[in-house]
Image (cartoon, rainbow, N blue to C red; front, top):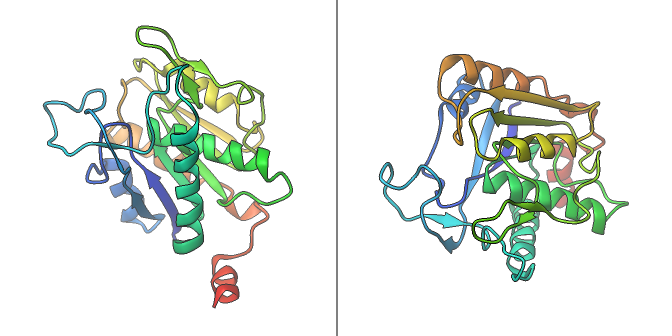
Amino acid sequence: MPLRLLCLHGWGTSVKFTDALMRELKRDNTAEFHLIEGDLDSEPGPGIDGFYEGPFYSYYKFPRSFEDSDESMLEAYELLDEIVEEQGPFDGVLGFSHGGTLASGWLMHRATTQPFEPLPVRCAVFLNSLPPFRMNPGEDPVVDEGFDEECSIQIPTVSVAGTKDFVYDYSIKLHRLCDPRKSQLVVHNKGHDIPGDSQNVTAMARAIRKLPVFEVNLPPRSAVRNAAE
């Protein structure tokens, strides 16, 4: 049975942007994808303007400045909770850039606010992503307080980072927030994009196929569906 992945796009893009990694994972039925589109109108994200037509969306006000409240971000977390409840269960969550920031923040928020409950997914994939952060125009991102401790994410993860990506250091920081016993890191030599060349696609897909999702203490999807009927 393929992994059922909840997929979150980057800032200033939309669900219509598919990539070679998704096609590769569909090819042998490794995964099926449930694409969630942001509901906030957005400017085109990095590298998008001029290459793709809009509309462009984000999941919450992004990036957050130090003056912004958490309201928009928390509403996005609630949206994911509702989607899991109504359309799940899902084996994992996969997010690119802003989508990975949303996914990691959501998982750490759930672990903090519901410490005795299992997380809503078995695994996570973060593609060129940052941990939750704030930044003022022209300044570097600052990771949110409370989300800067090691082992904040306890489920199996794959983190993908590009050495030419302007968020590379933050992608590594997000990887270090994951349990080292269950985390994998894939580094490519590209920028802020999901590589489409065969070598990098193979490396990313290999890591995702190695995710030990059945070691996570969650009931099988069939059991959850039967209980809800």
